[in-house]
Image (cartoon, rainbow, N blue to C red; front, side, top):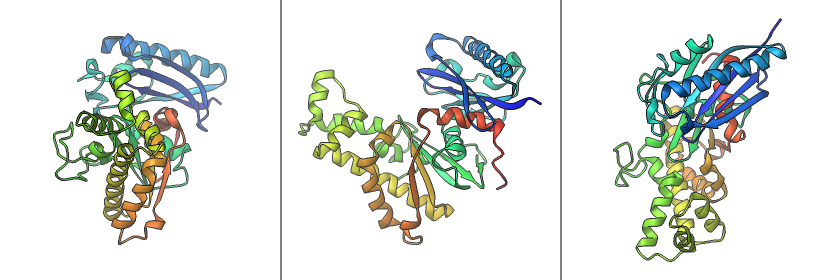
Length: 323
């Protein structure tokens, strides 16, 4: 009897990664290519189909049979139709029926899911939340994404927009977010927004070791801010304190609303854990008055950049139980 397997695809703004997994979640093969090299939706889906077929053949050589293909992508998705409504970083996918097109070319079932959701599913299957049935996963990157897992299952909500914790208001008179609302969590905690705040402060004459990076390269990065924070730079520490405060407010709100006690934080911004975690815990303690804050578990993600691949494959491999 053939061993069950699945293929996970992670479509990022820079790279597309494809991997074959067995039923235990072990990665058997992996492939990576440049997203921009395709240039058009039809070219990208054909490249994906070729890679899927190649990995399926390699899997068959070991007795593995691919049950389906899970695809994680950023943007507004219609997961029922397998359609990319809008993609913030890959505009040639806007309006494209990615799921059906890839399924037609490969002859395999294809399920399309938001990148933050597959991140959460991956961490729930094999990562930091593998022992938790219900939790919230948060990714700190250009923005702040999230996934809500209830009873072992992804909870999409009526409009498919659950988990958008990055657009929870934590500072009512704060900056205007890319979504158009004011004071969203991601304007406080996402590395990209921290960079904007740092550069604005430097342009106003604020003293900081970050000025050296700005003058040398014409820009600063989230990594620069984290390293400055570790060195004790006041501006960097203020930025991380602000990020931690926003995260603490958001998590306290979720705890009060849903009664959840387990949170996983990942993405590139999680590299700043040592700087934002203490103010996060302090704010959470100040705001969680109905639940003992010591009972709220906050863990750093474990799977790194492979979380999305694992989660995408789990759509066809892992029975997540009943809600």
